[in-house]
Length: 109
Image (cartoon, rainbow, N blue to C red; front, side, top):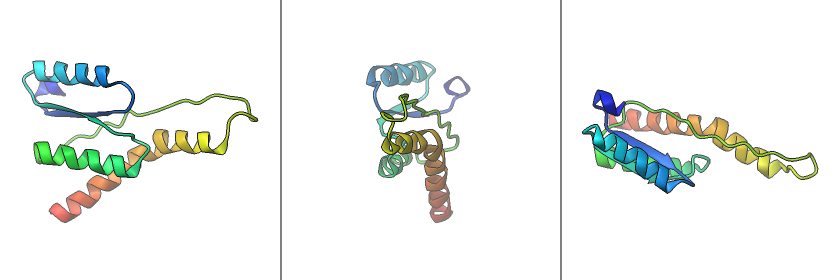
């Protein structure tokens, strides 16, 4: 997307070096970039990430949600909290981003 002229914002949780590298790659294409530390499984973090993007760029045109985790274990070691965390990140994070953007679009017109 940077190669097509789009400003780039990305979120990360555990890999700040990789996020910084991705941002530098976008900037090398001549577009502004922003790397934001945010847990895609946390609704407040998603909201804050979107607010940072809007504050920096004034708009958000394209969203690609690529967060995901895989937790493994036997039934006696794999708890409901682990399952809930996987669902929150692998499924619900997409809905959180979309829902938050829908609210912004409704308010902004």
